[in-house]
Amino acid sequence: MVRVGLVGAGWWSREVHAPAFHGAGARIQGVYAPGSLRARSLAEAYGAKVYEDYEVFLRDVDAVAIATPDATHVPLALEAVRQGKHVFLEKPVAVNLDEAQVLLQAVQTQGVVAMTALTARADWAAESALVYRERLGHLVAFRGAFWADYLAEPQAPLPWRARLGGGGPAGVVGDLGAHLFDLVIWLLGAPIERVRAQVATVFPGRENPDLAGVLAQAGGALGVLELSRVHPVRPQRLYLELEGEKGALRVVPSLAGRAEEAGIFWSSRPGTWEPLPLEPSLLRGRNPKEPWGLFHFRELARRFLQAVSKGSTATPSLRDGVVAQAVIQAVLESAQGGSEREVVRV
Image (cartoon, rainbow, N blue to C red; front, side, top):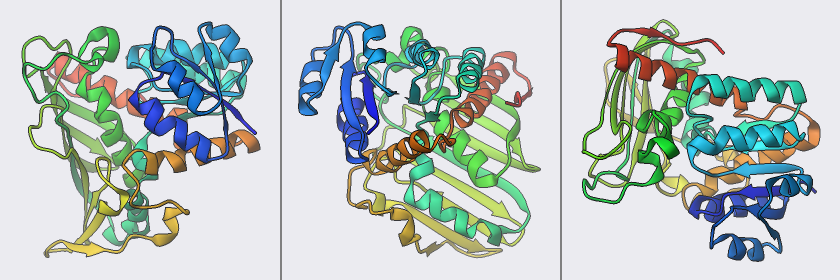
C-alpha cells in the first residue's frame, strides 16, 4: 500500500485530495501543514499523524500530494523529489517556467512518478470528446473560455491567489489558464506554438491579473481564448470549441458541478449544436452525481497510484503541467511586451 502524505490542510486537501487517495487504496500517512489549525482534524479522520518537520514527514511517506499556494509548489515538490518521493502536484506547477523546468529535470534524474492535477483530463465530457475528434477533419479554428467568480466582489478580502507571494505574477493566467491551455493542447493533439495576449487587473488592490484575452496558434489553427476570475455569474464555466472542415465539436467539462452536468455537442457545417452521448465506460466506476473535484480526482488518484506501483508515467504528467506553464509564461510576456511570443518547447 502506497503511503501518501498530504501537504496542506485546506478545503481542497480535506474535501478532495484526502478522500480521493483514500478511496483509491492509498494509506494517508500524515499531514504537513505548519501553523494550520485544521491539520489535526484532517489527520485524525484518517488515523494519520501531524508533522511539523518536513524532513521527518518525507522519511515516513512514499508519495506526497501537494495542495498549497502556487509559490510554494516547487520548493516543496523539489525537496520531496530529491528524497526519492513521488509527487502529485496541483496546478500551475510553478510561478515561472524556469523553476518548473528545474523540477522537471529533478524528476527525470530521480526517476520518480510526478503528476500534475490537470482536472479536465479526468472529466467525463472531455475524455468522451476524444472519441469524436476525428469527425472534425482538418482543424481550422478553436475558441474557449474559463470564467469564474471567486474574485468578482471588488471589496472582498484578497485570497492568496491575488497576491504575488501566493499566486505569483500569473494570477488568472496561471490559475485558470493552466486548465484551458492544457485542454486545448490535449484535445487538439498539438502544442500551442504562438500567442498574442493582453491581461488586466480589473479592481484595485490585486497584485496579479484578473482577466486575459489570448490569440493562439496551434496545429495550424487560430484560436481565441478568454480567462476571467471576476465573472459575476455562477457557476464557473469552462468550454472549448474545435472547428474543423467537416463540422465543430463543443466540449463543456463539469468543473463546477456534478459530472453528469458535463456535455459535448456537434454541429455540421453549417448546422446547429446537437448533444452527443458521453461514453459510459469512461466513468470507470465513479458516480456521476458526486461533487465536482472529487469525481475527477478519484480518477487522477487511481492513475497516480497505478503509475507508482508499476513504475510508469502518470497521465497527466508533470511534463504536461510544464508544457502548460510554458504557455502561461508566453502569455504574460506577450502582454507585458505588447507583441506576439513564441511558446518555449518543453
